[in-house]
Amino acid sequence: MSSVRRRLAATFAATALLALSACGFEAQTNQQYQAAAGANSHGDVDVLNAMVVANEDGSGTVSAALVNKTDDQQSLSSVTATTLTGDELPVRGLRSLLPLPSQVLANLGFATDAGGFVITEGAEAGRYVKLTFSFTDAAAVTIEVPVVARTAEHEKVTGNEPTPTETAAE
Image: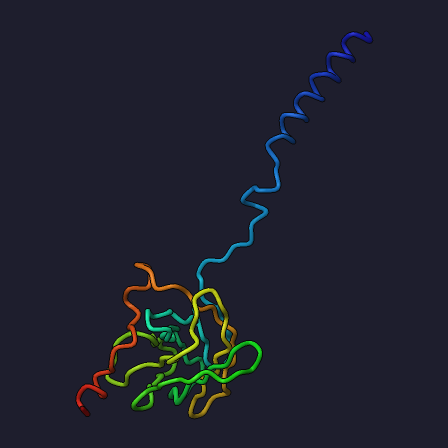
């Protein structure tokens, strides 16, 4: 009877050892899930996947999806930027207000007649900046966002070229 118990104990120990050897500190279940590089903030106006895409000249284009969750139309009036230590970064902005109809997603960072927002200097890939999105009739949203390198993944985000309004004015 004791030999059966010993074999059973040995089998159990071997099975447990094999099962535990599959566990490790690098297992996928131990990794934080981050679906996208950008940051999100939810409120009257949702700011989704917000980031700054670095340009070759040291500037960076603000990219985000904005969803007006209020019942009334809003407009994006400005974006300001600072470093995490509070130093202001220069931002070139829209030529007109960007309308945000109720419950409609609007993309920021792609070529539009209104233009976009570009941090003209200090947008270094790998860093974070604090952006404040201001609206006509909704609370401002302040969010810390990453500055990401311009790669094929971000090729549709406009660079630091002039907006259509700037081209027409020259």
